[in-house]
Amino acid sequence: MLVCYHEEQGWNMGLIYMDYNATTPTDPVVLKAMLPYLSQHFGNPSSSHVLGQRARKAVNDARMQVAVMLGCDPDEVVFTSGGTESNNHALIGALAANKAKGDEIITSVIEHPAILEVCHNLENQGLKISYLGVDSTGLVDPDQLPSLMTRKTVILSVMHANNEVGTIQPIAELARQAHEYGILVHSDCAQSVGKIPVRVDELGVDLLTIAGHKIYAPKGIGVLYIRKGTKVRKFIHGAGQEMNQRAGTENVSQIVGLGKACELISNNLNTYSAHMKAMRDRLEHALFEAIPDLRLNGHPDKRLPNTSNIGIKGVQAGEILGRMKKVAASAGAACHAQGNTISSVLAALKVPPEYALGTLRLSVGRFTTAHEVDQAASIIVETVFRQRSRKN
Ligand SMILES: Cc1ncc(COP(=O)(O)O)c(C=O)c1O
Image (cartoon, rainbow, N blue to C red; front, side, top):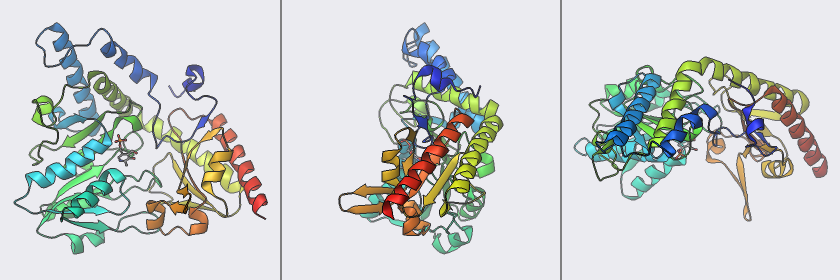
């Protein structure tokens, strides 16, 4: 199952792909399940004839596969266009449906822009947003919550795991406190699903976001889990699809793909995460052995098993990435004509600038092989030494 199928498929163009947190390739099992719904089974699930019924069954089956993975009822699963829409729906929909309670949100400073930009937009409209800070490992301290919660707080939204550093938040504890205050709880689980267990009752959330393209399903499909009884206004208006929560003819093939991706996770999560952790640890071991002045950003243990965010002192991450053409990864700082901007997540963790500017996010996945890890490590080591010697 964990074979290096990508070399056979040729999708990696000779690249060593270490950017699984940006997006994942579509699992071939997922693709196979989808294909008939892009050809012969093209019916509209709302049609009463046999083609419609076929499509309706496929959507219902997929909803069940998501529900089994999350440990929820299928009618609590709403298909969306992806993580961004799910996050917008959760925050804006919860505010709109709970106006009588108030108009305040609590979130964290290290959320993805799909939460933070929604919040900034709402702030510009006069709403009050309170931000939980993080410590130097990226962890939110639940003891901050009591000072931020008010009678007017409608919803708390904290991501399960961070996309850059991988730090895993104490969602269950945050949810427990918020619920005592009658506050709804949303968690953006775009990065945690498929890497660590994500079960709605264990997390204690009312709303939860999944993004298909982070879990080996295609781009442009996602889920918003809405716990039964949670007051959330419809976000996209039109016909009555998705239990009247999200209008628009269902994206059947993508939904089938997402369902299959969730089934794979339900059946193989332990294998997947053990493999990712072994690859990630092998990579970190090789880099820390060979390169002096490295820094691991994020939490050493409470961290996604696939994510390695490494600050390399005295180099520019953009230059490193530009020079090592064979390794696909991400930088923790963006280079502009005006200078360098450190990512807001690394800034929130107070990563010293000399490390933040040289930070690489290396994220491995289901298809990463030990051979790729060893090759990537030696390319990174060589490139870093070359860059450092240029500077001296
Ligand atoms: C934590 C997190 N939330 C939300 C998103 C957005 O998801 P999508 O690309 O499906 O809109 C991402 C994608 O980068 C993410 O990492």
